[in-house]
Image 1 (cartoon, one colour):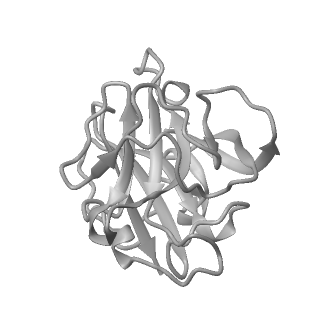
Image 2 (cartoon, one colour):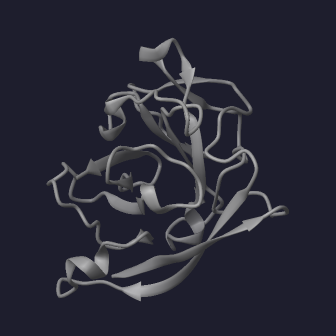
Length: 204
């Protein structure tokens, strides 16, 4: 199975729209669908980044974007934290797919074009290297920041058989700020049709 190891991130001031990146504001393909936390008085979730699915999946033959959001503190000094961000269907994280995406019933959205973001100042472009993963791969080989491949789960998170790993990130070791727990790994999954996604965070 092919995976794309993220070797590092490059900060850029100019970039093409509709590319895989972190920080800044979403490049909406259709009308804005900004997720909010219903439990926190419609607090807008923080935009983490976007992944262009047709870059990573050969069976997606037209442009389709996955926008990743988490309920987050305002900045590093803010002590706010919602532990429900680790669960896929508690309404505190969201994967918004455009175009022709499905929004889970647990997610509330608003038509905000812009909102809070993981990095106001910089856009971060992941640099990747293709690697091969299989049943003989060690845990250390799959426990990397990457697109695709075999998820390095340690807590037996409930994943349906035909779901795909889109993104795996160790969020404490990034050049942009995500507060996902003490020692977390964030897994972003796509449903089989690639019209819906969800997030699970495992925190050791």
